[in-house]
Image (cartoon, rainbow, N blue to C red; front, side, top):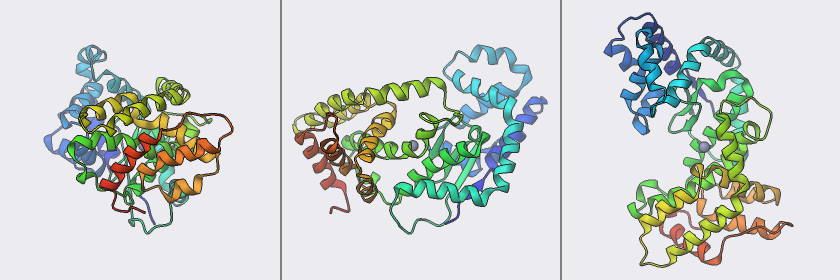
Length: 339
Ligand SMILES: [Zn+2]
């Protein structure tokens, strides 16, 4: 398998930033060219608004809008503006970093592929996944294209770690045991939470071991790192709350939509820290082969966690029989690969 590196989004971003800085008008065509690059196209398709990027990039780079920029720093988009101001200073470094990454692509793509598949079974995966580098947030995404923000190019370790995490999502999605479009509206949030805990929990062992618990420089904000660690430590309590909420689903008269919303509130940061905690216990108790074998099935993850608790020397809180039955019945309804 080959990975394709696409830096067209980042390059178009640089062109636009330069025009704005010089006080030149950015034509509709230039904006269209930016949003037609594979990276920005998918971000706009999935979660961002085109007008948001136009506004934020213009405020950041147009020197005539300095006052307006100051005012907006406290607004809802202030977090992004502060980051784009950092990009303004560092973009030349990113350009150099990307040049070095390109020169060493053969080695880097090999590293990304082996890290991402370290938690995946052998399979004929799609031939050439694309990694698109853009400027959007100190983050990354594993959509049809893999999106990586240029701030992760500062070191090979950082770029490889984040890209492997997202490639894991991208490849796992090809194996997923259910079709997301077939989930009933009222159960969408429930299935999403279950899937997030599983997929982020494993993926975080590919990068957060280094970004959060290791020594590589992380572009993730300090506040995120603190919250992540805090919630990992609180996971036994979160499991208790999650378990009693899941049990409510065995009562058919209850509103599944609102239980789904509650589950999302109980499970912090889209399942990352809780999933990380559960996966850690599974790995520690020598169940990693089973974890890989069932990587396509998020419903089986909770019973596997219980198995790890049974093996573990320190007493831990596990999921009740009732909760596991609830999850099993959702699996039976939607899984296309019941074993
Ligand atoms: Zn992820």
